[in-house]
Image (cartoon, rainbow, N blue to C red):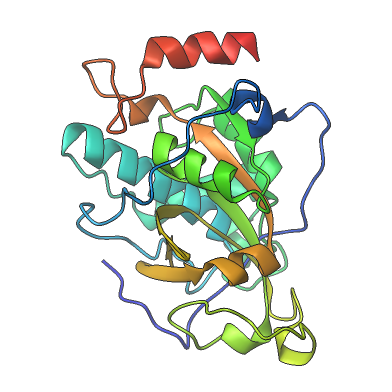
Length: 258
């Protein structure tokens, strides 16, 4: 596994793509009757033994790496087996989804990253390294209940953040100053995609650049510009239940209703 190296971090999330047909988490967590409050904390990250960089120290493939990390997590927590993809597999998905041309090499003209919605649509229709998702729903990143419900029930979020230059050397993303200008301006470093898999009061923990990276709630609110919950069948074990107790049958009924 690759260790975190602050000097070799690439980004690669392209600007958010809009599609009015995208399902909304707000329709799943209905306000009437009130949705049950999410638990005070949820941890779906600690038991996973390790995380790979998946080339994100050389390539702008953070969207692809985040997808791989979500599949890694679900497979390990439901089966105890860890599928570690190789860089050739990761780059093949980067080519299919983001248009990367292998002969260009890292940093070449086609190494321009991916947008998350295109990646989600590909994941659902064509599959990602052997697995298709059932559906995906957009989560309001400004709605703390939706964020926590998504992580608690589905194990992770698939988020995009417009990172400020101030955190380029940081091992965690802290609460920013009130004035989001200069080196704290959103996007002044670039766009990045990560999957938070843990939350406690005041913070989440995501996987990024092969390591666990804490995110303070004020940072999440200030810089997260898109978030999705992925309805991944691999999150449900052979007994029909997920680690969070979610029923695949009920999930399929809910999807049909949406």
